[in-house]
Length: 440
Image (cartoon, rainbow, N blue to C red; front, side, top):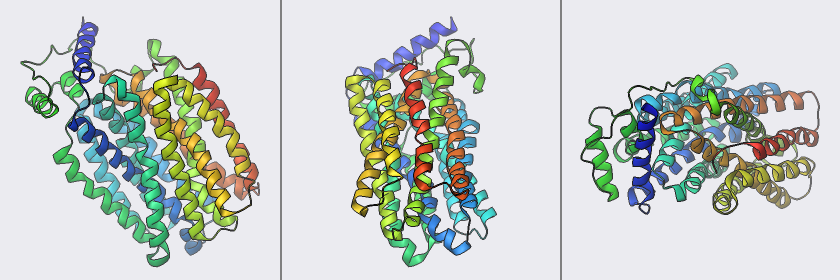
């Protein structure tokens, strides 16, 4: 009976979204999530742009720098599996607000770090907020999107990440030579904190969450949102599911028919995170080591993130025609082939910028598609838990990627062969994605 009620409630919510075109409120929510993901990109990539300056000022070895890169990623993993699942209990909006507070305070404190140890700890703290916000944003976009536009909207919002990273690159190119690396983190912290009042006053809670959990005042809140969307109002709330309570633990994701697709999705997240964050963390530093000056190296990072944005948007369009999983698998395969020659290129700056654009077009495009796959794989009552644990599992790869690269380079392996090593996860991700049984 409980399962039947859950199905009926989902149909009520979906019909509300699917039967009408996108309203201005829905567009606003997707746009705000895009902006918040931009801030995440700024916060994560700040350390990559600042790394050459920090390494020079503090005389940090590649091994130490790899651990600093991985510290924020460890925090993101903890935030994704330890904080974001509470979005399925207390709401998407509250977790987003909490995450912004953690991010802002962590970034401001990073600006005052006095040692490598302090830098690692404070990057971990900022990572907690970054990791916890992503799953809630994904759920919010999914739940406010009609079926026709859901894949595209999730991929569009996800594309905010590389745009934020790209903007941070332009800021860094101007700010680092003039003011030093601390100012960059202070700037990022202030921008993140400034988003808190916008979310508090202008971003509503998910209607699907309100109908499922029915906290106090849910009917009034739902009707306020429906009125702004130009939708029919509710006379009463649908019957609440009582007999079957889904927890926020990982067990619900690994039971029954969900076990195999969940584990396969986790492995793909791990593999793609490993290569993606190797690129995000090391491209600027390796460009400097290869002979580019700091400004040209930062522009390599900008080109990388512009390619990531274009790839994410294109996957959204192509998924409407060819199916999301098929497109993701092809993109992973293309990324695997392109990353190999990139590490051996020693020609003009313009050619390097073009090649890194193409590489990230496929790498990030495939990766952002995974968020849409995760959002469609799980029902509302466990959606953020499912997305959060997928991201958290992937962060294991993200943590290992930059750190392993640091040890490989520190051991004397060439830059070219390091890129060859990181092509392997892309080949494996393409293979697994082709076999994953999940909604398209």
